[in-house]
Length: 560
Ligand SMILES: Nc1ncnc2c1ncn2[C@@H]1O[C@H](COP(=O)(O)OP(=O)(O)O)[C@@H](O)[C@H]1O
Ligand SMILES: O=C(CO)[C@@H](O)[C@@H](O)COP(=O)(O)O
Image 1 (cartoon, rainbow, N blue to C red):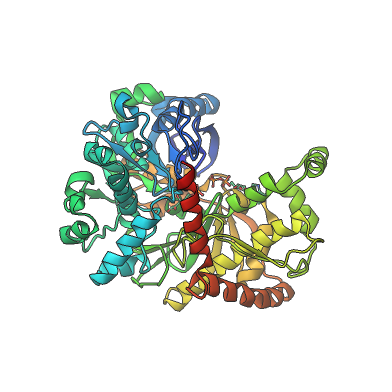
Image 2 (image 1 turned 60 degrees about the horizontal axis):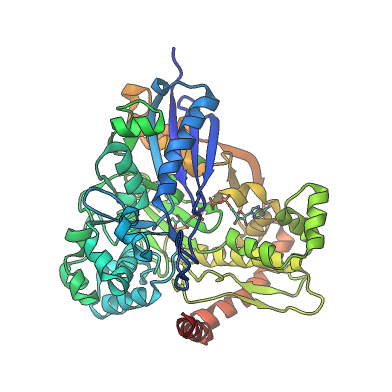
């Protein structure tokens, strides 16, 4: 009998990955990665010399189409699979990554008249320039006693849909008026595949204040954000929401031509990169928290009940597996934290040494501090070098390194940054547990979980929990392929439920990171110090970080 496959497409921060997966057993036959040509535009638009505003992070939607056009045919070729053997497609995307489009779905930045306007482009999840809009949102919501805020930990993030839309309205009203839809990029890609918009419950729920029970906030609330936004939902968002286990539609003729796949192939409703990964690491039930550790970290877990946890990014009914409430928390910079050090604080002698050993600088730094005891360097850091997403939810917070001396070495700072992210995760875990959502097991996926043994051992020691690791190098892409199998359904050789798909197609590594009792004790001491700094700088004890941010913004404005 002809073997059957599904395709998972995972759109990350810098690249799109396509994986071809055997539906019977989840074997990843091959994958293809395309780096985005325009990467993250945080300084200039293409062909422009005008400096973008601080905290801007834009993308070009052409890069997403290029992934479809090059990476899908490549996996078919490499895997030696015919298009008829591909029975389903799933798509996941970093989120909240949003773009303004016209009524035909054409991104406004594709239009000649808007191509030099920053607000016509995709706003990437880590676009943090809408903090003042998020502050206004929070103020209005709290003044009105909006109940929906409880589902978002009590604070709206500047990363999400409404503050980003408010920023467009405030800074370029013509673009706001010209956009027919403000779409999640994942929904936009699915629309490019099936020819119509099928708005994802996962994206609407976590990023656009929608819930299955209450829908969106009312018009009066939006009007108080800005009178122009009174009809924001009706005018700029789709109110038809679909579960991620739903079929979005079938590949259109033009999409078939673009991708080399067969017209009529079933496509799943879009998903978020973090959430889609749970079934790919065998998580389809409560009690297990997955950390997807890459550029940033997302923490996702499920519960039978809905709990409102201060500072936890969102709780959404059916957010991952139908029938459960799924929670999302996150840290806005984890791998980016380590990359910052590697790119800015390491001398050429380290580069030479790494090249001679045939390892990356990350690996070299790790090797140099592997045998240090917790606390040996005398350093401690706060992990807010890209703001704080949980549980303080404030993009204006910034990083801190304490304890540096003339003896401090780059590798020690590297380890302190890794430890800071682990403490940040422990803060999140404790918030869940105090909020009535117990975490029995930790799981990890993403580049760091597979690449860095030291990081994973530090996380096990800091949290005092065992950690299991995804067997897949591309858990989100594999997860998307699982949802593709559900879109196909058992009738076409896929599965009828995501639980069944997970049972057959997911895998874990044999390796488990076990906490080291001595390190656990030492980290307990250090964590107390971290918590002190966390609360002092993050909970109003000292607002110096916010003041510095506003001084910086003034200076940047003066220079522009
Ligand atoms: N050996 C390593 N140890 C720790 N972190 C690493 C190592 N190698 C790469 N990284 C980090 O991994 C991050 C990329 O993770 P990855 O999951 O591949 O990407 P993404 O988040 O874009 O999907 C980078 O930010 C980098 O700092
Ligand atoms: O915020 C979410 C999911 O809600 C992520 O998409 C975002 O952190 C980006 O993830 P990556 O670091 O690119 O894997």
